[in-house]
Each structure stands twice: as C-alpha cells, then as structure tokens.
Length: 123
Image (cartoon, rainbow, N blue to C red; front, side, top):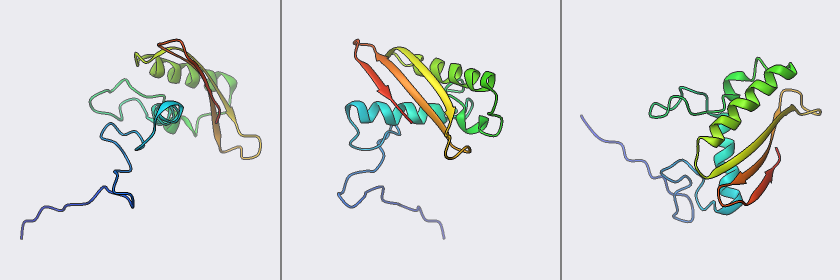
C-alpha cells in the first residue's frame, strides 16, 4: 500500500522549532547570529549540495585538531565561510581546546556586521 508519511514540525507552542532556512525558530538579533555562525562553523564543505564550498569544517576536522597550525587553518576556513555572507563585514575566529574537556572545541567569534555593529560570541 502506497502512503505518504506526514510528520508535524510543530512544537508545544504550535511554532516550528526550525525555520525553512535552518535557523532556530524565534531567533532574532544576536541569538540568530549566534545560531547561524555556529551552524556555519560546524557544516563541512561539500555537505550542502546547493553550496558545496560553504562550511567551516569543524565536524570533519575534530579528529585532526591538536597543533596550532591546524587550528589556525580551521579558523581561517570558518572566517571565509562567515565572510561569504553579505551580512558580515569582518570576522575574527579563534579556536581552542577546552582546558576542562580537551575533546571539546571552543570557537570564539568577533564579528563586524555589514551595518557596522560589532558582536563578540564566545564558545
């Protein structure tokens, strides 16, 4: 028997938990930028079929991280990903291993938005 499966994307408020663009629902302002930059950093290049060059590559690089040059290279890739979006005028990205949980990567982001606003995101 052929049937379509319909799954509701609604949460308890009746609002979708994720917007069609993939951002967290109801994220605005700094929270939206934090969500987008986190997703962009974690996306591996080639993961999105319609944007094969997009992505910071953190997920794929986790097992290779360790040396300062590897972390600097990854930070550079993340910065290029951020600056590929016209909403950002400049970005500084620093990657470090969490001293308490060495398997955890921390990404600090200092961003300049296109309209000139500066935003610092830690973690």
